[in-house]
Length: 102
Image (tube, helix red, strand yellow):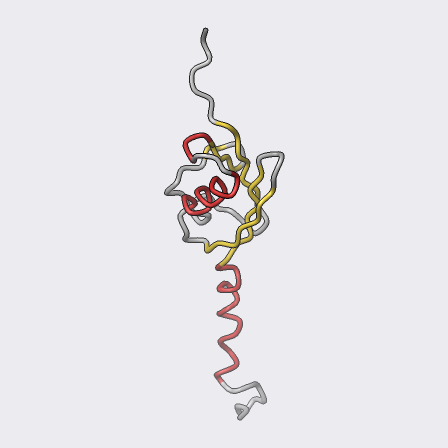
């Protein structure tokens, strides 16, 4: 049913307000320069889940890896939302190094 001015009924007006919900999930690439793994996660999901899943797939202990986003270390409680991540962003994985003196 159309309104008197010829526009669609009120039910059709909500579509423009729902557009931000399309970006609720992000595709994140995680790479250690040898392997690339793609994850689809919600903006509010703690990155600990992604970090643990990557380490499990690669046969590494989470304590052996450090994850970086834009050069900054990622902590397990961080979320894509808190890091202002966008769809297609990349997390870099490096081997954790402890010590170094002889």
